[in-house]
Image (cartoon, rainbow, N blue to C red; front, side):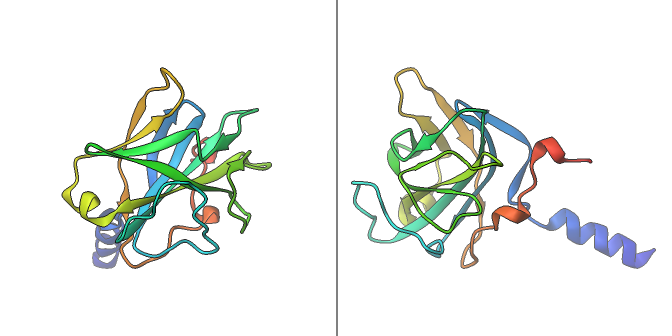
Length: 164
């Protein structure tokens, strides 16, 4: 019984990288939002925006609605008063970084952002901003991975399959 209680306490203390419930936004649903000090594998900065001097990388894994595509021009990330454009996208399961993605068969892809570490440290909340007129904003809570890599796509559950 003591081992069981210790295991339960350890599991409860673990930071989960994915949302317990889906967070919907204009293009689908957000499955996972993380920051890391490590550059993602195979990453290329494709945005015209400058890379911050001391970058922290953010990855937002999403499941796109049927028939949707997404590009680096569609969304930005607001932290406090600072707006960061999307720097690259990747269809999940692919090693290639691109400007646009359709999510493949699973309709999943990841948006990458380069953030200024000093701004992230100050906090102020994060919002995914749709760049289309009247597109709105969605509040996002990131899981900080520190010096660890982003959670692999295969380890992020699909909310539609939870509990099956």
